Image 1 (cartoon, rainbow, N blue to C red):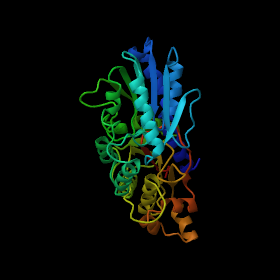
Image 2 (image 1 turned 180 degrees about the vertical axis):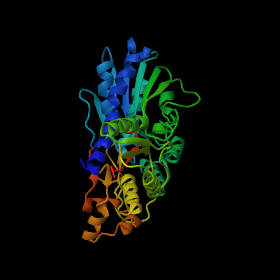
Image 3 (image 1 turned 90 degrees about the horizontal axis):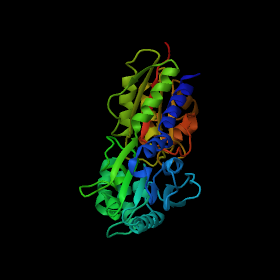
Image 4 (image 1 turned 30 degrees about the horizontal axis):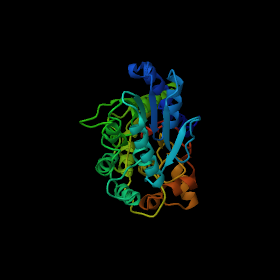
Length: 375
């Protein structure tokens, strides 16, 4: 296999290791509140909601009294459940309708009932209940922060101030019930106050909430597969954050220091401050910056969003190797100019290297890989 083939296989293993179904199944079986609950309601919101719901239903002894699943466009819906779709990454009127439906479901649960809440990445936008503003105004605030390069912690802190579902809002609506939350983390640090903008957390929350999967599961899955392929594995100790292009350069320079037949892995989530008019995503921009810095060295670099989506594109990420810049020159493409105008998608669509997985059914941020050959 080539370095690019190996890199793709490692990244695919990362996504598979973060499949939430296996983690939900174990969590539901182990939860004492769910084992003998006579009256149970299920609420699932996020990019992983379908897989999480399917696993929960397989583990529960009897079907829930009510079920509501909120997912983004392009995600397959679980069968025999009430499904709503919302906007992502920006909320829309469907997100508001989903927020109202969640409010009604939680308020309608009887005193003493058990509510199982399954949360994953994307839930902040998929269901909203704005405070003193329209959905359009809400979306505009989020968009301004995202385009300005704000990280998810900053964006979700703002959401907690302007949304009745966030900052413990769901738990308050279900205060008369027993609430059990299982969460797939899509944020650096795995803070429950940040994931989904903290709908089940807060000083007055009575919910029992547990993170069942995170970026570490994906990185560990990637490492295990890289070892099967015969690579020595080195994992960066801190998550990759900050501007995607800067993180790409740091990652490339760390890889260049390693011995042959080594796989360097990292996880995290970067941001992109959009200053140009191109099309791209943080993972594609990360790889383009790394590729430029390596300048033709025989090192393969890849980065992928575990949810299968990278910015407003049809790709999950990208892979570049020693031949990428040669191909670009033959096509008359200037990689630095593409990077300057945030046009990484156009670059990789032209030279090859885009990773297209489609929605993966999970979301635990991003995984990066660099592979050094035998010599």
